[in-house]
Amino acid sequence: MMKMMVCGLSTKLLNICIASFCKVRLLEKAEAIVIDGIRLGVIPDVVTYNTLVSAYSRFVSLDAAYSVIHRMKEAGISPNVITYNSLMSGATWNCLLSRSLDLFEEMLLAGIHPNLWSYNILMHCFFKLGKPDEANRVFQDILLSNLTPHPSTLNIMINGLCINGYIDNALMLYRNLRRHGFVPQLVTYNILINGLCKARKLRQARRILKELGESGHEPNLITYTTVMKYCFRSNKYDKGLEIMSVMMGKGYTFDGYAYCTVVAALVKTGRIEEANACMEQTIRNGIELDLVSYNTLLNMYCREGKFEAAYKLLDEMENGGLLCDKYTHTIIIDGLCKAGNISGAQKHLHYMKMMGFHENLVALNCMIDGLCKAGQIDRAMELYKSMETKDSFTYTSLVHNLCKAGRFRLASKLMMKCLRHGKKIPKATQRAVFDGLYSSGFTDEARKLWWKIRVARILH
Ligand SMILES: *[C@@H]1O[C@H](CO)[C@@H](O)[C@H](O)[C@H]1NC(C)=O
Image (cartoon, rainbow, N blue to C red):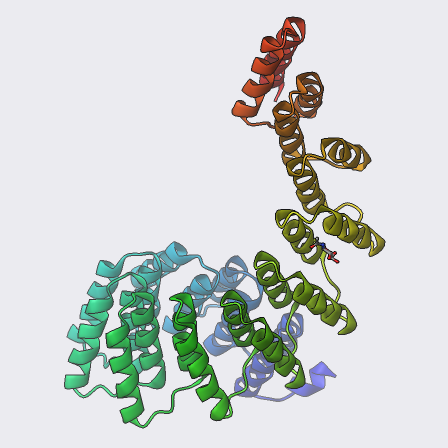
């Protein structure tokens, strides 16, 4: 069938086919078409290969993309600036920033002239690498050459200065550009507002916000969320909530993340009723929070000691068909332990096991720590014995608390077991056991322990 598709068609059509397959990540199909094309005498050109380079660098790996260059050379086709731009943006996409710089150099060495997009990527990389001076030099090169900067170039520049802490320079550049007739896009305003909020320059942020209002652009969800988040972060909850109502009034639908931010802010200020109302609205609006959002909220509730609300949320999660993970349970158990509600924590531990999470090491460690802190060290030991896996935290917590209770021999036994399994225990805790044994007259034990520690150090 594929043969029929390309039979008698031009390279241009071949390229369209390949681009469509690449777009939906069917790279094998795209390759099959290339082969069929060649067999039928439709010769791939530079566009064909560039399409493959771009797809490989996005969906597979930079190395896979780079190997296409060898194939091009074998086929007698020279890579061009678009090939290299694709590779560079692929490298950037995969966070291989210095690789991107190498590719730029390779392109120059191959005698290929970079275009504006090559420079854009290069600037972006330099900024991401924390080298604003180099980025600025590229920018000056663009201005000195005959290239006309695209709005994206200016946005990259302003954003790069912001993320590198040069917010004043970013602002200066923005003003300068405006004087020279640059018309900012909405994204430009958002970049500046975000940068100014992060640098806590609220007065200037407000000014840019005002300019945005006068520009004829409508602030979008990103603008509002940025300002709202800033307000919450700097404890200006009322202001943040006010922005939220403005957004709602404008008919913006929040995403789960924004809702999560709002609910967290309400819980933090002790407005549990409002937080619950907001949660209910989230659900009414049909917005599905993901597990991470739920866990974040749960954590917030637990930290504020609002366990009733936490359990209500848990109900909601389970009734909504969301599968809680081990973090969900750990958060609750840890919260209850920290609040000193050991029986509640134990009840939840039981529930967690019933739900199939037997070996949730972190939760079990929280429980052990909670029991120890509540002075129920024997119950902590019982729990320890029932655990299949233990880690350094389990041992350290128990040994530390056994020492505090003056039970040095048991502490020593436990510590030796820990060392035998190659697990680490802090030096201070080791010292406490050792000193405790000595001062309570168990000198033989102390000596034995000393050797065990030495041996463990050599072995592990
Ligand atoms: C402890 O937590 C449980 C929830 O598991 C709760 O029912 C109980 O009232 C709490 N007890 C205290 C003293 O807060």
